[in-house]
Length: 224
Image 1 (cartoon, helix red, strand yellow):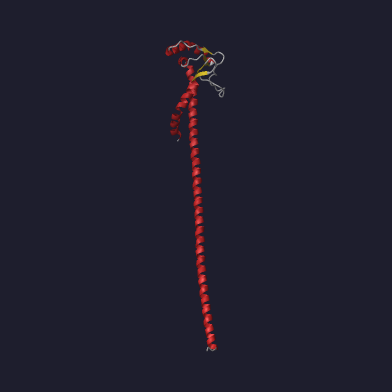
Image 2 (cartoon, helix red, strand yellow):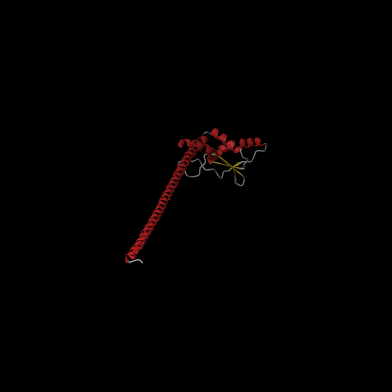
């Protein structure tokens, strides 16, 4: 039978054992909690690093897109400037060529032959010209009709010079923005509908439009 001393020692041993178990358990819990905290902390750090990296990449992509858009805008603006410069030079050439047309009408021999060629091209009924060209046109009218008849193997066409409706006069500094005609003729049917516009201005416009692509290519090297 245990005496009081034995009981006391046994109780102390049991108490020490329980206390030790509790300490060890608490240490285990504390270690597990610390480890879980470290894991969560690392996960949070990695998540934040990933968020920052993605944000940086997104901003970088946006920056690249903005740069590309800005570059595209500048490139388009440059192209438009080049095209505008081409158009300006081309129109300057057309304007200069238009002024040269006036010299053609001053040489009566050359202009008279040119009028005859214009008249021969279409079997019109009504012929319109500038008022200042009427006498010159009438002087070549008969030979033009006969030439057309010979070429087409038909009777000479009936062509009447319209003395009521004239083409506008040559361009001048006084009426720079008004209607003008550098020379030539307009051939019309009996009902007044235009059959062929054989003015110098119309011929120049046709040639200019036909040659415009070639002119643009030529001008590109001058302004690039």
